[in-house]
Image 1 (cartoon, one colour):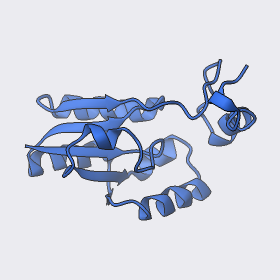
Image 2 (cartoon, helix red, strand yellow; image 1 turned 90 degrees about the vertical axis):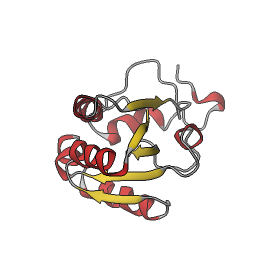
Image 3 (cartoon, rainbow, N blue to C red; image 1 turned 120 degrees about the vertical axis):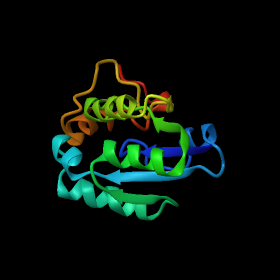
Length: 147
């Protein structure tokens, strides 16, 4: 049976631990879901950044509704294990729940990563700009911890 890695915009790097958790021959995909990107308020500039970053990675960019694309890949390719980088994004969690309900036999592993910056308070995830304004002051500190 095959492994599948489903990347999202919070984990666009080959050094993410999700790649060591999955089999070496796992297919890696990013699903370009415009309705999801709209719902998460990702603007055109950030979309361009995401696309340019994806173009540098060895993966397949698939267009469509993310939960349906993943369910289709699972059915067609005999995927038994899905590996997903952890994210605090509630919209992505909703998509992952849809995948869980449509693929009940699929083993799903959410892979944690060390935080870029450890914020004391829960960050405002509505816009990247608001998050970055808090995080950038501390991102280059030793340990990246805010006070």
